[in-house]
Image 1 (tube, one colour):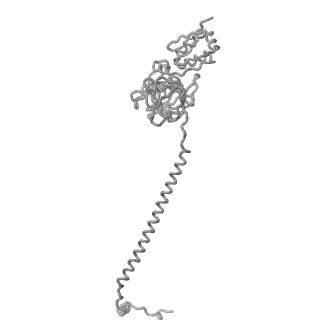
Image 2: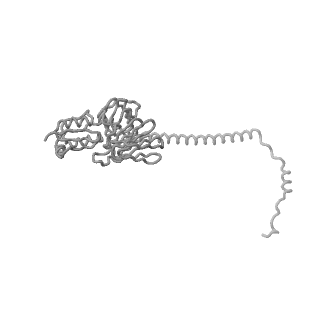
Image 3: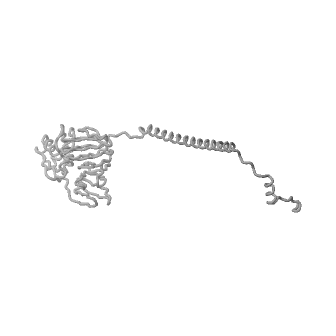
Length: 333
């Protein structure tokens, strides 16, 4: 087909003529318009209702999933909770000593009682306590002291003073233990030490070994024979002899040493460590007797100094207790 054979298309004038010839389109009746509006409204309402149903189903599904999740957590919670563990046992109490196991009530506690994790222990004005942690570390609490026990390796001091004996007579390091204080956590390095809160400051006295306090300004290390007091960022160091009066309260709550079947030498080593003194034998004969003689009975209720005098009075040895040492001599040839 070529261009000359295409049919002619109607122009605008032709279309206009046809429309004029057809005349105006008849208007819709009122009934027809009402029917159309009703149909449109019905369709709109159906669409809205469907959307609401979808939202409602989605909301119920979400709520159900939250409920199921909460129920699952509630059911599994008992399996996730850790039961309180025994962390220490009291070896001696003096005066009023109370514990709070986390229920807000303070109840009296006595020697031989066990403490579980999360327990707070407090001593009154006339109270002191000695206890042994499950890991072997020994603690003593002075009067008006408040301590919380996290576990067998950690406790928190909020008031008063705690004496920590974490070493051994041979000076070997004991088990790990950290005492949290307002100035920072204190860790021992084979040590006997005291941490005391005083008027907004913390004083750490070292009787044996070394300690490290992790302060915000850096680690502070103290050695036997000294103390350091931390007040804010200020640190004051001072000498503190192992037999200084600051240690006297510790002897008042020292747990009794089981002497039954032990040698006099064993007992004297214990007494020396409890008092910060050294043992000196006046002669080889006195040392030999101490190594050979065995003991029986008990020293319960006595301070270490009182126990030394009481025990040696039953042997052929006599003590001379000085400020820095205990001198032992033979009383018979």
